[in-house]
Length: 487
Image (cartoon, rainbow, N blue to C red; front, top):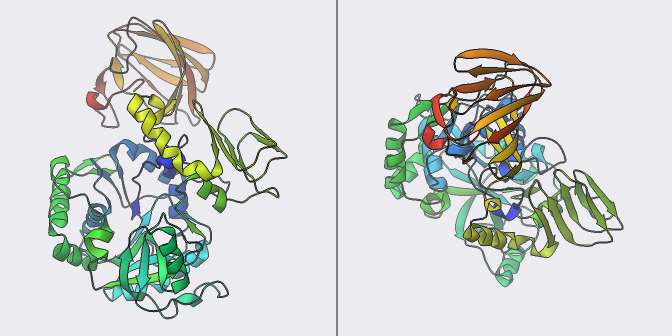
């Protein structure tokens, strides 16, 4: 199961609530997102079944599309109506995986981790299978490389094998080690003692156990979690390829981490050391540390020129970014924000996000480009009684059948061919052609072709708010309550 929640605000301005870090290509320099890498690094793992994914309702189409892009057909995409931490998510996945009478092993992963040595990761997972099959609750403890104060720690009941000089798989010959205790994020002096002790690992939040084993411990130690999750599943509703958990039942579930609910209390816990280049990419400085650097210690992404600059993370999503004679900086350019920060202050980005949220600034939560199940739209410019957007409709995508009370729209197709329905009459609109949607007309647009349709939309009228929409039909099951413009 892959946990797809979280907003990743410390990687703002790239990661935001509407499109958080797990859906961005942040590691390795390739095009795969962190979510896609989480699934792809499992390739070759013994007895691997299609994944269960658990995500926020607002991100469901992003998750489905990213799985489609890598050719993965999930067993289910479970939609949480609200966040309730990891214990309910694990309970829901274990109940769902057990629904057909089987008792499989459940590998619990986060969608936003970087693991550079996929082979060693798979070897470590396989080394924990026998213990998990025997009923142990196995967690993967990251072999620490520094006295980090931002992670929780796990103390094993005996000394851990030394790492570094061993080949993949060798540190795990003795199997998982019983857990002595979990420790919350320590101060630096305590973290230094942990590092010297030889029994401590970082708490990664990754687990391996039988569904029956984790459910039995949840029933014993947190029965209200299992009860609420079972009710939410019993009253779930199918929505295309998604399973929507029943809102009221899930809302009654306590919000608690699986570590707190079970792992800190159980006598069946065991830790398996993992030394595979792991990072939770919790900040821009952490991303700089884990990425491949050039000879000057720089990480460069996108349209970037670096001259006489050192130890910087420079990233461009759109415009050219030039670093000239600078050191130890993080510079991130997006469509509406440019972040410039000292690399050792990158953790404080969350403070800026909080300030923006209190001020009601839209940049705190959303990008200028907004993703929809059919594609995306990008606000280009606006004025008094008019605004301009770029719309991209994916092959096979279709906007809802809708009308507006207060605005008219002009659509100019600049790439591909669209089918436009207007008051029941369809027309083909090709490149360099346009059509006019008068105020009050029922209309929709679809892409029957094999390439994305790109068009420019010019809206005009006395009111251009995103709530001026009436939906009549929508193939994606969205209601007017969730409507936004364009839809």
